[in-house]
Image 1: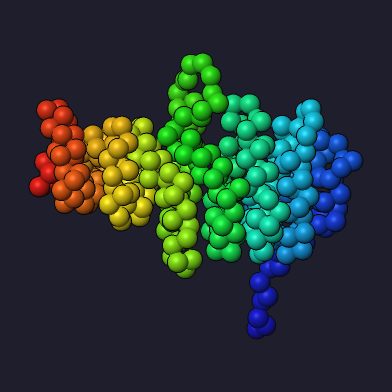
Image 2 (image 1 turned 90 degrees about the vertical axis):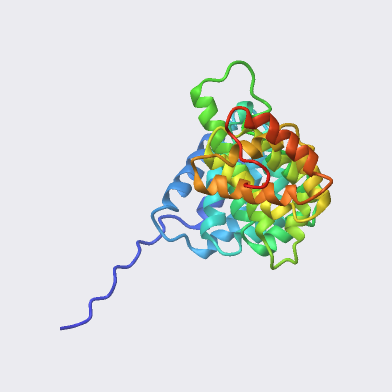
Amino acid sequence: MGVVAPPQAPPFPFTVEQFVAEVSPPSAAATASQACAAFAQLATKAVVPGTFRAAVPAVLGLVAREGEGLLEAKESALASLVALLACVPGAAEDAAAHGAVASVLAACEAAPGGRLDGNALEAFRILCTVDAAATATVSDDASIGPLIAFVKARAVGANPRSRGSRDRDDAARDDALAESALDLLCGLAAKRRDGGACRDAVVRRGGVAALGGALVAARNDEVAVRALIGLAMTTAHEAQREELVAVPGACAALTRATRSPDADVAGAAKALLRTLGRDEALRPAVAAALRETQASGTAADLDSA
């Protein structure tokens, strides 16, 4: 009986040249949007040829294109950028080299209601999983400063550009953005093969305050545990611990978290609280927070945490 060959993946239905032509000027916004949406969908079902690395500049060009009626095209372009970064070797390095962070942040700033934020955060997260792209990003002051500021704003769980009342859908969307923002901060802080350059960039740009603020604002355990993991990786030194304690409500949020029904949240909070409590300079602030929260039965004491 002969060996049956495994089924072959179907060929990708269009070439990179065709794709680039459809997303580049003078192609209309509607045509570019359809091409990017089709590519993003196909990338989940078929193997994307490595040749599509050449599409990165054209996709970023669409993200940065100015004019009326481009919002939907930019949404699709970011979806296709996420697919390229996830599926095509070398795409992340090329994206970083072509100013992806600046282009995407500018598009997000111009978009109403934070409409592009979700795909932007996912693109940044994937880009920063690639060591060379992450190093290039944190080494560029023009990129890393605005990126951390963007992430900080989303990590606290509310879009700073939103206006008016917020309903349940808004809150769920903000929580999802906060989780994505914290995933990015934690991913950068966790890198070690770069000698700590990414973690140091997060710390220098206010990442500790962002993580502390996210813990204070957390409405669910998924946000809280991400904030606590990030804090565990960015508060190794006294100055960073002082920065955390200075965040309004951070100590109280930390003590409340020690009684979370989620074991991961409670365990991480207790470990961090013990670390803060061992620092004589910080112990009074931590003890004060414990006294404030013990009355409601939501916090452990400093020695048992």
